[in-house]
Amino acid sequence: MQIEGNKGIFVGGASGMCLATAEKFVARGGKAAILDLETSKGAEVAERLGGSFHPVNVMDYAGTETAIGEAVAQLGGVQFMVNTAGGGVAKRTLAKDGTMHPLEDFQRIVDLNLIASFNINRIVAKHMSANDPNEVGERGVMINTASIAAFEGQIGQIAYTAAKAGIAGMTLTMARDLGTLGIRVMTIAPSLFATGLTAGIPEAAELQLTKDAAFPKRMGRPEEYATMAIAIYESPMMNGSTIRVDGGQRFAPR
Image 1 (spheres, one colour):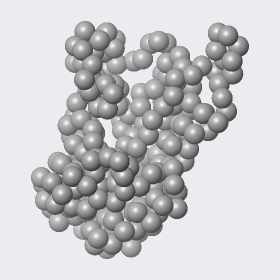
Image 2 (cartoon, one colour; image 1 turned 180 degrees about the horizontal axis):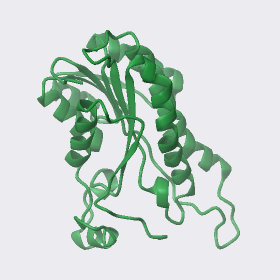
Image 3 (tube, helix red, strand yellow; image 1 turned 30 degrees about the horizontal axis):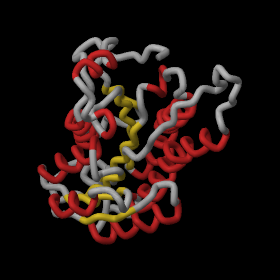
C-alpha cells in the first residue's frame, strides 16, 4: 500500500508507539485520525499532525463504532489502522495467601485487550471493504498489538498473557476471513518499550529489565515499533502473522 494520500486511524494514537506510527504516516503524506481517551493529549496531537481527534474508550463498544465512523467520515475513507490500546494487571492465579485471582479482573483485561481489538477490527474492516482496490487488489491493512508476554508470560501476567495470546491467535484467521476483500491483518508483539510508565525509569532499572535480550540490551523505542508498522503497511506479502519486535528478549518467569 502506498502512503501518499491514504488515510489512517490510530487507536491509542495520543502517545507512545501508536503516536510514533501516526507521525511517520503523516510525514510520508498520509492523513491521520487519532482515537484515544478524552483525557489524553489526542486533540493536541491531532492538531499538530493536521488530523482529527475522536475521543473514545475502547471498552465502550458501541461508542467505538461511532468514533470510528466519525473518523472515517472526516478522513474520507480509511486504508490503515493501528491499534495499541490495552493494559494489564499484576495478579497470580492463586496468591501465596490463598487469594484467587478475581474473575472480574481477568475478564476486564480480556475485554480491554482482546474483545476491544476484535471489535475495532470488525468495524474498520467494514469501512475498508468499501474502498476501491489498488492496482494489486488491496483495500487496507490493520495492525494490532500483542506482547511477547503472549508467548512467555511472567508470574502475575496470567490475564494479560491470555488476552495478548488471543490477539496473536486471531491474526491468521482474521487475515483469512478478510483475504478475499484485499484486507491484510498483522500483529506486532513488542517487548518492553519506553512508553507510559516505563518511559522515565532509571538506566540501571532498564538494564535489569532487559538483561536477557540478545541485542540491544535496552527497552524498545516508539519509533522502532513505527518502523515495523510502516514496513508492514508497504509490503503486500506481510499478512496473517505476529512479528516480535523485542531485541531477542525472552521473558524469564519473573
